[in-house]
Image 1 (cartoon, rainbow, N blue to C red):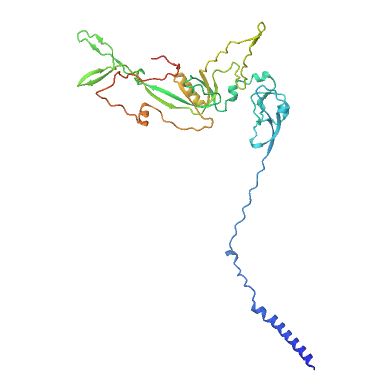
Image 2: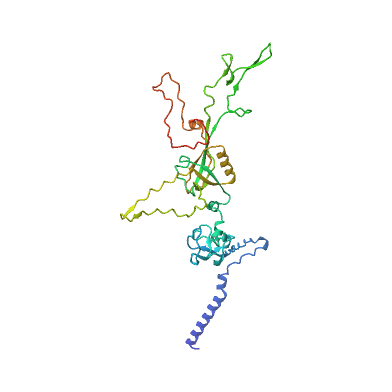
Amino acid sequence: MSSTVRTVLLVLIVIVLLAVVFVAVLPGLNPPPPQPAEIPAAQQPIEPEATPLPTATPIRFVELVVALQELPRGFRIPETAVALQLWPEDAAPFNAATSLQDVVGRLARTDIFREQPILTNMVVDDFLSLARVGSDAAAVLPNGLVAVSIPVDRLTSVAYAVQDGDRVDLIISLLFVDVDEEFQTLLPNILRAFVRDPQTGVLSINEAIPGRVDTFAGLNVFAVPSEGQARPRLVTQRTIQDALVVHVGNFPPDGQFIGIPPTPTPVPVEDEGRGENTPLPPTPTPPRPDIITLGVPPQEAVLLTWLVEARVPVTLALRSVNDASRSATTPVTLDYIMRTYGIEVPAKRDYSIEPAIRSIRQLIAGDTIRLAPGPQ
């Protein structure tokens, strides 16, 4: 055998041995990763179930007739002034018009605003039906409120600043006096002493003495008032809050006061003879209103009626257009003013000034409403 063949055989034997070593030995040097131990089913952790996402409730819409422009009361509605628009079914009024034929060509019973759904009771067929719908006051009065009128002047109406649609609070002042519980008359009572003649048995009544029996320096005396009960006790408090001003002044005879155009200014008439304009007499200034109508709940309407019957003047306090809050207030008396503002009663001195101060300056705001006769 030649040396070349021998060399080839040796090489083949070495290759075979290396292949055997690679197949038999290397897998033992790299064992497979250990498999996790199997956990019993009772000890396996319970995975929380996935919370299903809420299903969105679809919003249902209905078609309502909506105003495309302002529709004043008495206006005959044309086809171009209204249209059908989608409206959420849950928010749709139960008596909303759903067909253009129910609205077009009819008369607006009340003022209808732009983008407002038109209700079936907002339109009528003719002017006779329009006249039977009642007053504007009843039309603008919110549900749950009733209208009551009270007198005002320029002092109690915020110098006539209060206008229709405002909101006001009501402040009242009461004068308290002492009365006899049995007689229900002003104190002090008038006392009359009577004696019986021991001989004739005739009763005689002495002169009436106003006052009360008192003791002074050990003697029984009559305490006679120097001026009667001339100083009633005053208390002021806010009562009704956030009342709606329905109207200031008297209502028109037909009850329509909303959307009524103002009376135009008359134009001067040209004098044909001289070719000049004849000036018209000045338009008289309308009188200031002396009455106001408020929208309040029924119980507060009873209170207002009592105040009017009792002749208690009521002062209006104008509220901000953005203020609908309600808060409690403290009744104001002379004691409250002295305590709150730190006013002290001046001490008596053995000196004074001349001339004597017997009154202080008072601001007179004009004629006051005198609801009862009394001292000026």
